[in-house]
Structure formats: structure tokens, C-alpha cells
Image (cartoon, rainbow, N blue to C red; front, side, top):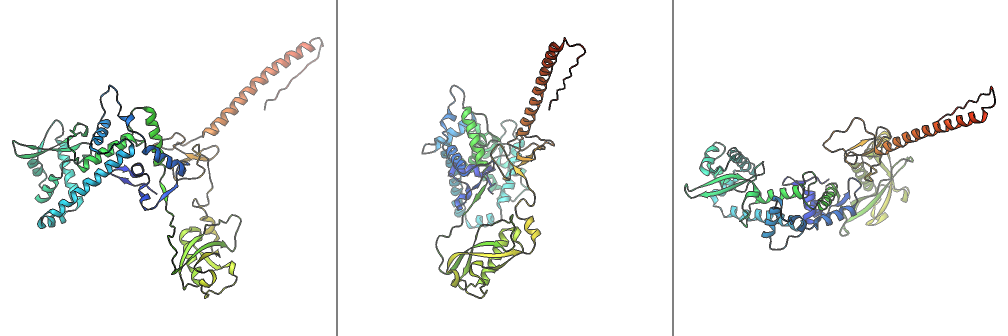
Length: 473
């Protein structure tokens, strides 16, 4: 389940755009299943389409002044030696800048003197970040107006928060740090006082005249661009609207894909082991008993039939909760074989075998046959989902069919209503009400025509009575 975050952002969205796959894809994990009935092909198309989305349409502003988003994109385009024309180009470049900025700071530590290195070893990253956050709070207190805070004054305020060496180190690396309000620490040298001064400034008003923005500055811009361009929850309103709607739809699909699987395929046959695929059968089956897929078991060359039974029992017990009290009894394809017989004599070093066993507790088998337990439900959502996919759902109070709250128009932040009737049942009730209403009108018209006809035809027969009874069902 990929719900990882990096720099405060959904990493499965960022990494899919920048690298073409989930972060877990670096270790061989691939698309497993998507929520809201998303398929592997739909996921791949969303990755490709969103990654190759051109930036040119977003940068065109006509006679209007540039927005902050356009300024940031144009700034990084000017920094890059190659053309940044797509979303993938842009976000890959920023991630590379963060990596390069981090690597560039590493050699500085190795060039420090032995004494300073020993001092730094006594500090943790948490100590440095905590102290710098305290300094940023001081700058936030002085934020109204263009107030600069000198290095000497800032160190005096924070003198009790840490050692002088730690304070000097934090002040030296304070420039470019991101404040909780979205502003960035700016630093300048005051020629009159011969001191360094600090203040908080909005990133859009900073002069992009440096070819080496700080790591924190790049992270702040990356977070802002992802939130403004891609995140459906925070996406800003930009033109063209058709592009924005398309981006929102594709980004939602990437965020809806969280489950990734890895298929552990043996690269080469191990000549010093026996690889057996075990197919499990129950000795007392019922028509509802599941047939689990085979499990791969690896045993030494000297393993016996008894070793296979023990290992197969462990494997199926570990994988399936319903087989916690499983007992493997025999190998039906080989008849009554002794447990002491060497397994290699029967199947060689590779092959498959059927193992038969029983569960001592039928209650446990029935209870844990499915992940949902003994409950039974029906999922039929408008998105196409036919089973529980882990997303929030609610059931119709009339037909008891489950569907996603999001597909029913209920935001994930909103509470589930106490009473809910699905659209299918609503339409059905509406049709029935129309049918009853129309039938009533037709019945009344027919009754009036019938009465009029009877009176006209039988009017000359004195004393005759005609009664019409019309039942509408």
C-alpha cells in the first residue's frame, strides 16, 4: 500500500510523473489493483498523459500580468540547460536540483576541522531543526513591515536555547528555510553594521537572480507547483479550463492507485535446492470450500516427504488465516508413501505436487474463508467497482447495495448521512410514481367516457340502472 509522502506531498503522484512509476517501482513493484475500478492500462495511460502534458498552454497569459505560478515555472526554465516543455521535464528537474543541492552540502562537512567535526557529532538533525524553527518564529513576530533582524539580536534572543556553536551553525544555514506561513528566510549583509540581517519574504517577491537557490527554497517551490498544478484538493484555477479538468482527472486516477505488487520470480534454478509448487486439497471438502493458488516451497536436496508436509503446513498457515489449524496428511498422487522417503526420488529438483489435508476447526475455516469474514454484501458502484477496494462506501437503505461515497457525490471530508437512497432506487421510485399517476388519470377518463356512453345508450329504458366499478391496480 503506497501512501508515502515526501516534502509533505503525495509521493506516488510526484514520483509517477517524474519517473514514470511509483517509488516502489524502483524495487520491482508494479500495479496491483486500483480503487474505483481502475485497471492497469488506465493507470499507465494516466501516467503517460499527465507526464507529457505540455507547459506551453499554462505559460500563455496574453495581456495579463504573470501569476506566481507562471513566474516560478519560467524561473526554473531559465535555470535548466535543456528545454522544460512537459510536466515530467519540470518536476524531474526540480527533484534533481534538490538532490544536487543536498550532495553539494556533503563535502563541506568533510572539509571541516577535526574539532568542529567533533562538535557537530554532538548535535542531531532534530536539534538543528528545532532551533531554526525557533529563529523563524522570532522572524515571524517581527514580520509586519520590512523589519530586518540582525544576526546579533537573533542570537541574543535564542541564547538560552542552545550552545554558541550550535547557534552559529543554525544562523549560518538559516537562509532559504521555509516558514510555516509559506514565506522564506532572506538574508543580507548590512555594510553599516557589518552584520548579517534576516527577514521573512514571500517567494514570489524574491528576486530570482541567483543560479543556486537553496534546497529549502526549491522544496517550497516544488510543493507550491504540485499543489497548484496537480493536487485535486488544492489545485488553483488556471487556464485553459479544459486542460485543468483533464489534469484533475488524470491526477485523481494516479492518487486512486495505491496497491502495488512484486512478483518474486526466481532468476535462475538453484541446483542445491528442491523447488516444489504445492497445490492444497481438503480431505473433507464442501462445495463452498475455496481452492487456494499453489505455493512455492524451497527445500534442501536431502528433504523427505515428512519435511514437505511440515513446510507446506507452515506456508499455508502463514498465508491464510482460515488454515491456522491445518494438518497435511498425504500426497494423493503418490499413494501411501512413508514420510522418511527422500522427496527428490519422487519429483526431482523441480515440479509440482498435490498435498491433501484437513482443518481441525471447521468454525475457523468458515469464519476466515474470506477477508470480509462471514458477512455478505453486494457492491455495484457507478464507477464499475464490484467489490470492496478499501475506499469509503455506504449502502442504500432500500436495496442494500454498496457504492463509494465519492461516486455518490459525498465528499470524503463530509459525514455519511443517516439515510441514503441510491440513484437507481430513486429513479425506480420516480417511475412507479409516474406510472401510478398516469394510470389514475387514464382510469378517471375511461370511467367518465363509460358513464357517458351508458347514459346515452340506456337513457330510454326506464327504471334501468347501470353500475360501473373500475379497480386501478
